[in-house]
Figure 1 (cartoon, rainbow, N blue to C red):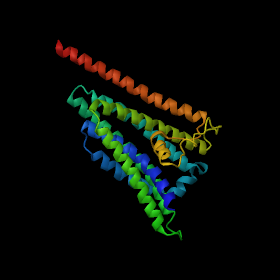
Figure 2: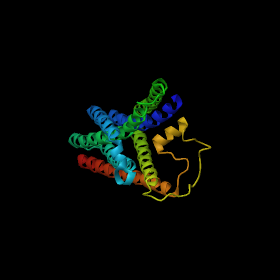
Figure 3: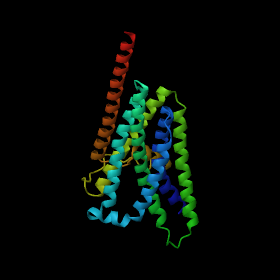
Length: 275
């Protein structure tokens, strides 16, 4: 039970911890207050408990695939919010004046609050459900709790490492690294949503294109990190690869267009000031 708990809790904590570390580094980069972070944690934790308590009713919805579809909705919503967040990060970086920056920062804080609350709700509910399953189990709690604490500690430690690596970069490189990581995380959200839709039989099951489990096992620490950051799947289908590639390309294109537009605005402003 110790090893099982470590793997399960690590997987859930690591996904949320990586997203939190990236967004916290973004807040540091833009000098945002952390009120959004505490609000998101409180809302997400409360939502996770409600989700866990109402699991039976949620699972019975939509012909028995309610849990999968709710998780898909959360993943897609987070992906869309990450599109907004990454774009606003670029806009804030090139903000033409203080008022515009403050206006965009308010929208950015709201988007980050919602995204983190949804991520904590989803991952926290999985942890709540897992631990609740042992309430009436004859097995001792010591192994479960020790494994859970160890898995959570590893997950948050990796998240902290990502945070300090990002905040230690020069501002311009930190912007590039943050946008790149957000793009990968967003693509992973879409890939996970695709996996759930296949499980729910809402998308067709296909023959895997390859099997990379011999190189990186999904249950290994590296596999867990890649799953949290990329939505790593050792045996992806062609549909999963297509949707993942499309989601990453869409976000990358949006960021490039936003950067180009903001640089044009800055150049026009500089010319007007010279005149």
